[in-house]
Image (tube, rainbow, N blue to C red; front, top):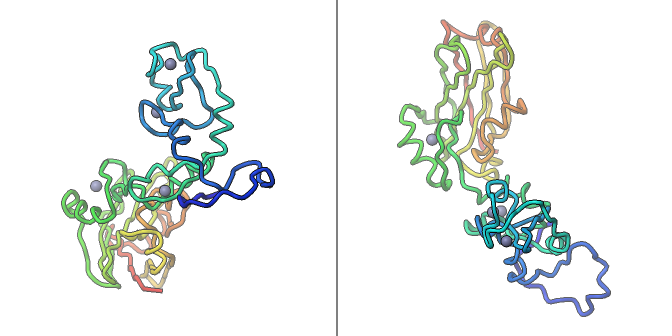
Length: 279
Ligand SMILES: [Zn+2]
Ligand SMILES: [Zn+2]
Ligand SMILES: [Zn+2]
Ligand SMILES: [Zn+2]
């Protein structure tokens, strides 16, 4: 259930309301404020545990604390506050990216799933691998790539060849380049992974430096072509908000093994034809 932060006049008779789980009338913000964690200012959501004097702290902070941040009293043994849990279940809580512009308030059980895909969640560096810890707004992604990842080359045009050199390099390797067309920037990624001993797989995918909604306006085609053979994959580009890792885990990309790579490679170099179109 999704709550929007609009004021709805209360119904004439609240006793007649058939909903006994979550009321559609937004509750006063003062009530939600009671659930603020004194340490991280995020919300204290069920299971709600209190100190022996009744102070609340969120479960993430609680794990790092040896005493109550409010009264310094002991946090253990854990005392559950079922009444506050019941109140929490009747309240809409704002998305944690509300300061960035998200207007949604949600039931606490739906908050984590939404925040995972919230358009206002900061973008992380789209480069594969976890070495770069940068995050920021969508507008700041391209300047970051130009500044911090200067080795990534860019080709202009809808139809280009993504040349991956030395595909026989051992271990996990990433090849990355940018393609610019239709006034947008696309990131092309080829990743080689050894899922289990001696069996390597290649994953090729195109990401849009843009939102999921913008990505829906495009289609991409990856094609390996040569030696009288052709292997093609067509799909909607993924938003960098979703990232490369999710595409690879789900094999939602062009997947091929080393033998196939060798059928198309020339001297250890693999050319992938990339075509981007608007749809
Ligand atoms: Zn906290
Ligand atoms: Zn306390
Ligand atoms: Zn949100
Ligand atoms: Zn980066």
